[in-house]
Image (cartoon, rainbow, N blue to C red; front, side, top):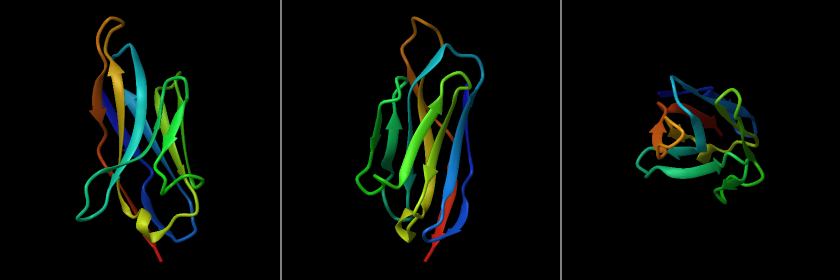
Length: 120
């Protein structure tokens, strides 16, 4: 089972970007999904999470600007980022708690990072 993140890039401050995360391989279902980011010289931090029932949580720094969503049928997740600021510049990582079988505990997988650079 693998997670593949995509959609990063370079954007001017105030602009928008959309990140996607897709799970591939054989598994039962994806439980929680999330996006994290790591800026140079800083620790990885939570950006947003979403449960299978689509209950969301956001870091205070992105509330009102970012929207996390998911498609359970397609096993994908997305992060829509609007009103981007220079301080949003970071490598963004998706993660997901995946059950490989109905009676198996979920294990957390990480996708490869995708660079988001916001120029001021």
